Image (cartoon, rainbow over all chains, first blue to last red; front, side, top):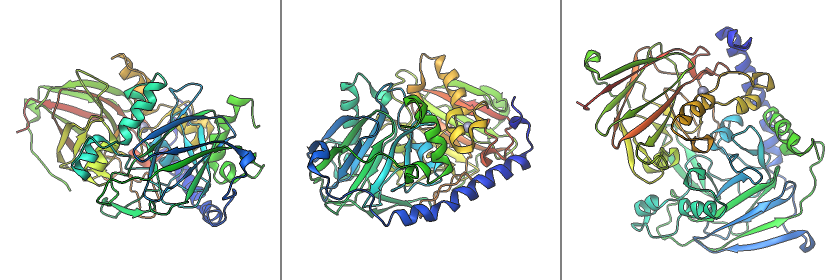
Length: 274
Length: 212
Ligand SMILES: [Zn+2]
């Protein structure tokens, strides 16, 4: 038992309310930052390390070394489901519950980070021109394709993740809840999901800066709540690029107390702050 | 939605009280009913389900949510596996809202959420890890779980808060097993947020051989 275990419920509630108030005080900075792009819309060719065109329905995987950035560019009908692992120890992986709970938010955009199950930061969202992404409902599966299109033979994100994981020596148990970019999903007051789009603007992009060496898998399949009647995902582009080093006041590293503590857990893996 | 069912507690084939903060696991055969009783109210009960004969098939929060098109669990919700099968169905519920998006507390996430000084405290994922290790499983097998009785409203603007529990003393939830199950529970020890009123309390688990 620690001293905290012996605190009274009233003392613990006071601590919680203070943390909650602190988290809410930070939101104006994040809201303002979302209005201004941080990274160039066109990346200089010499900074591009790799470009990949992922056809509709398919998946792609890559290692993103710490400090490099993965840009995902919307093709115009697509949404992109994603999973991330610590490439140096894949038992550490993206944790959907921690990511939304720690940041008090399910609509994550520029300035926010993606947490692993070990209290560390996998990636930072350093830019986002779309702002509508799903961190709750998940990607497509054979069963969602059967429900939506009457056809479970269409390619789906669950199987794509299993294929990619299998090629890195992982298996079914390594495919945890995912996120989907360019897929706006809100939760109404009654709990029902509502689709708010985000998948239809070609050229929108999200920049994800790796904060550890990350194994990334992207699956280019329609979100299970996408109301479009046809299964017709277009290609999306993934760009791996040499992005700017974070400054002392880097938004993602400093916007919230939670992120600061997440980086205090992450940076020691790499000998402290780069 | 709430749905009450009177059951004879003396007729249960299994009856155990999980102490505050502790883990539990048990088998549930297809057709049996597991009742989790929130004895003192406002206690979060973190729960994982596995197919008893093949634990690579396990509860999937996202399959459950997308199948029903809504963010919370309530009476009538089919709890789906990662293979698209119904593992269990919520057939009674006095609370009306259970979370399956916020996951389980851990020592590591606590440091980020509440400060580094909270690292050395009880946490659900410590409970889960000890319990699943009895079945040859590891951290990789701990996926998104259900938080019975935990109130985590997700607002239309995306705000997520772990709010005060809304379950009353002696409230319950009934799960009918739709396949043979391994059920793993962490009776949440969290005192840093209001998921259990900052005061972990015992819960009771009972099993009946038939749903009626
Ligand atoms: Zn817990």
